[in-house]
Length: 296
Ligand code: R5P
Image 1: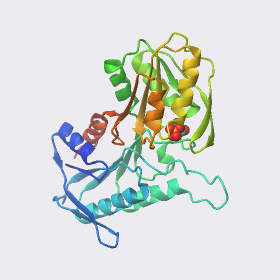
Image 2: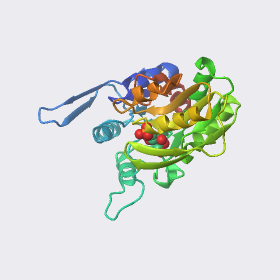
Image 3: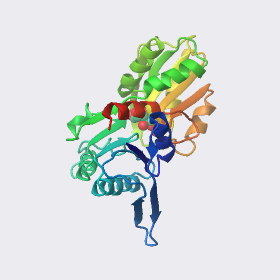
Image 4: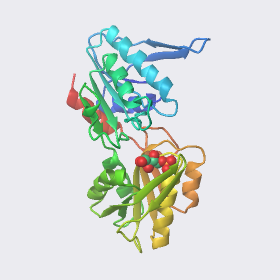
């Protein structure tokens, strides 16, 4: 068994390989002078079960293409099996044709990943609004794992919250708020969110009242930070005590972290699906657990 990390996930792949006590595959990746990508597999993968870890964030087109080159090469070089772990999976939002003529990007990306011989795919807290299960779009076995138990354990261990109220800033975040609250043995609620533009959202409370409570806000992604800032404002106006924030994918657009910290939250934590200044929680044990289940 070999674990290989693409350019965004080398560190994560090394952690997964360490958990599994297995080898990390080596690659040479560079660009030709004309901008084309060159990829060479340096490890012997003949007859091996290969786990490829490649988060597709920030430069998704490039990183998706790199995954395609890599998986196709692995199969061509005789790998017995290629299992993809795409911790952050871009393009999942465009799963419908909202305006006439739009590309169905989610489906196209799934087809491309399948077309290079990927045998099975795992994502983590994939941004699924309308698609309930990834098997609705993938024809290969697909699984969407959840990093919230790992984040909740981190908060439990290092956070400064006492029996926090867990808040999801929008309806979609209920799935994560529920998991985190169960793990922390506490209660949860979600707010209502209306997106007014790429960087502007309107968030409204529902039934919960955070007066005198510690609060943990959980979400899948922090991008511009607008969602979290609006949620924090509501909680502070209700009289919340300490507020901490946890997200799976810290995309963190420039200025977003500063904006959140300026609100006075006690801590902001994310995972290493997207390496960042707040990636204090590793998803390596989660990935390793599933690689073990697949076996050789
Ligand atoms: C959207 O529904 C997601 O779950 C996140 O709430 C969103 O991506 C956060 O974006 P931003 O940080 O730009 O508000």
